[in-house]
Amino acid sequence: MIKVGIVGYGNLGKGVCYAVEKANDLECVGIFTRRAPEKLTPVVNFPVYSINDLEKFKGQIDVLLLCGGSATDLPETTANMLKDFNTVDSFDTHAKIPEYFAKLDKVAKENGTLSAISIGWDPGLFSIMRMLLGAVLPNGNDYTFWGKGVSQGHSDALRRIEGVKNAIQYTIPKEQALDAVRSGVNPELTTREKHLRECFVAVCDGADKEKIENQIKTMPNYFADYDTIVNFVSEDEVNEMQKKLSHGGFVFRSGNTTKDNSHLVEFSLKLDSNPEFTGSVLTAYGRAVAKLAKEGKTGCLTVFDIPLSYLSPNPNEFLREKLL
Image 1 (cartoon, one colour):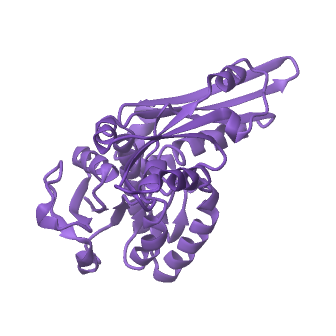
Image 2 (cartoon, rainbow, N blue to C red):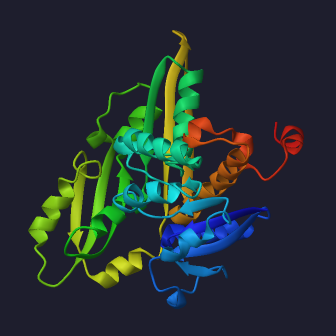
């Protein structure tokens, strides 16, 4: 039985709880939270502890499933936890992945632990498809579209702006760009031409809306490169929107094998719940990290480095017989 710990209990943490409950080979040692544990009633009846008690569980947990945000939580906390535990996280600031990887790889190798970073559907499953399809069709172009749906990382970044009470962000593919890719003409598209980002923001009384809107639209790695619409709404309106955290997206590879034969490959996701699906991906990779750590692997890994068979609870004999 693989023993896991869940760090953080937001939407992603709840999604991980559901996934761990369904896994017969995983046991949750506990949920670790910054909130008062006695005030938390988890969606699954797992023990709840203060994050300050985490160090007491050293040697009792095979892997920590980290459910913090990419804006500040993970960059500030993962390296410290990695000194004592193996970790899996969903860090999704694409531009900062190389430096994040380098930092954690150093810490993990110094402490004999293992970390898998940027685990989800993008980065994550979409990353695998981009790599795989590029290897199969080397003469071609990649196209990635997200949405329409709620981006958890971008919504979290909004909520961390001073004066923001609550917020949610929708990523919307531009239909003209989608149609151009599906037509097979291999268009050259800028980031701005592919997506629109729409934000719904509830602010504190007296907050400077103009300043907040400017902070959003100029935020590097999140909104600066996109056409961004900012709507100021009530907190009740944001709360209502947050009841349905749907998302999805597409990865395309358009290319040719000869001048006469072109090919278009499309991989898509349509998700009723972004955090629940991401939590399921995180949990599957938690299984893989626990297996690899048991074999003595240390350092930092991405989805490119982890054999697919390690994600499954089933033995290789079963996979060969039923899925190959």
